Amino acid sequence: MADWQKISGGVTAPRGYQAAGVAAGLKPSGLPDLAIIVSDTEAIAAGVFTTSAVRAACVDYCRQHLQSKASARAILCNAGQANAATGNQGWQDALESSQLLGQALNISPDSILLASTGVIGQRIRMEALRDGIPNLVAAASKNGSDTAAQAIVTTDLTTKSIALETRIGDRPVRMGGIAKGSGMIHPNMATLLAFVTCDAAVSTALWQQMLARAADKSFNQITVDGDTSTNDTLIALANGESRTAAITEAGGEAEKLEGMLTAVCQYLAKAIARDGEGASCLMEVRVSGALSDKAARQVAKTIVGSSLVKSAIFGRDPNWGRIAAAAGRAGVPFNQHELQIKLGDLALMEGGQPLPFDCQAASNYLQQAAAGAYLSEDTVLISVSIGNGSGSGKAWGCDLSYDYIKINAEYTT
Image (tube, rainbow, N blue to C red; front, side, top):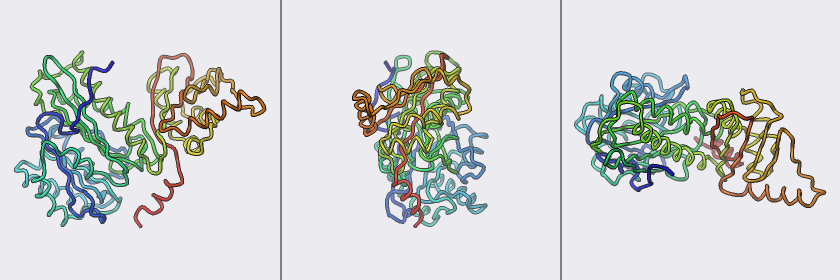
C-alpha cells in the first residue's frame, strides 16, 4: 500500500504556491495560453530536459539557470509558439520574458524559469506576452492550478493534474503536478511539459537525483509517435514550506519523498500517453525476467513504440508476432525459447512456443474473440517475460489511428 493519498489542488496543493492561466492572445484560437506557477519563497529547483540538438530557447535558458543557481521563485509557460529554431532573436525573447515577469512579481529574473510549447520555428508573440503578463500575475491564486493546466495545452484533449500527500516526521508533506503532451511523444525525454511543486525541504543534489530517477521511470517510458521534441521540460520545485526537517541524505524519508515524486510523474506520464493524438486506448507494457530493470525498461518501450504493434492494437488484432518481433530488436539479449507473452489474462506465447488461434477449434476461436474484445477496452495490458532475471520495467503508449495522420497533416494549416 502506498505511503501517500490523493488530494485535490494540483500544483497549488502544497503550501506556499500560487498559479494562474490566462488567454493573452498567443494562440489564434483565443484559448488560454499563458501560465504561471509561483512560490511564496525561493524554492530548490531541479530539471530534466530534451536531449535534442535542436532546442528551444527556454530549454537552454533553464539549463544555464540551473547550472548556476539551483533555485527559483516562478515558472512562466507560454503556449502557441515553441520558440525553437528561432535563432538569436528567440533567445532575446526568452530573456525579455523573464525580465517582464520579474518586474511584474518584483523579483529578480534570475529566480524565474521558462517553458514554451507550440509550433516549432515560430517566435513568441511578444506584444501579446507583454500585455498578458500583468493580467497573469494579477490572476495568480492558491486555487489557480486548474487554469494553469488549461493554459499550457496545445493539441491535448484533456488537462493533466495530480496532487498527493504523505507524512514526514509528524507533519504532512504535499506534492502536486500538471503536464501537457499529446503528440511528438518519445523517450529522450518524452515530448512534454511537466511542472511539479512540493513543500518538503530537500537538498539541491538529492532533489535533482530524485527527479532524474523519477523521469527514467515515467516520462522516459512513454511514446506516442517516435518523435522527440525540441522543448521537453520537466521542472520540480521544493520550497520547504511544510516546515519539516531538511532531507539531505539517503534513507527512509528520502525514499518516501522519491516514491511520491515517482508516483506523480508516472500519473502524468500515463495521462499524456492516454491522450496521444488520435488515440483510442492506453497501452501498458510490462516486462519481467530481464537481467536488470534498465534492460526491462528498454524492451518495454521498444514494444510500446512499435508502429506495427500500435497499429494492431488500433485494429483490435491480437497479433502477438509483432510483439515478439519488437522485443527481439530492443537491443537486449535474451533466449527466445524463454519468451512469454500475455494480452491481459490471455496467454499468447509460452516458453518460446506460440499458442496459435486455430479457428477450426471452438475453444481457440473463443480465445481469439476474447482477445479482440479485450483490445476494445480503454487500457490494454501487454505482459512479456524474457527469462528468469530479477529485472522488470514498464512503458506506456497508445494505439496508432487514422486521426493521428489527420491531426499532424493539418497541424499548421
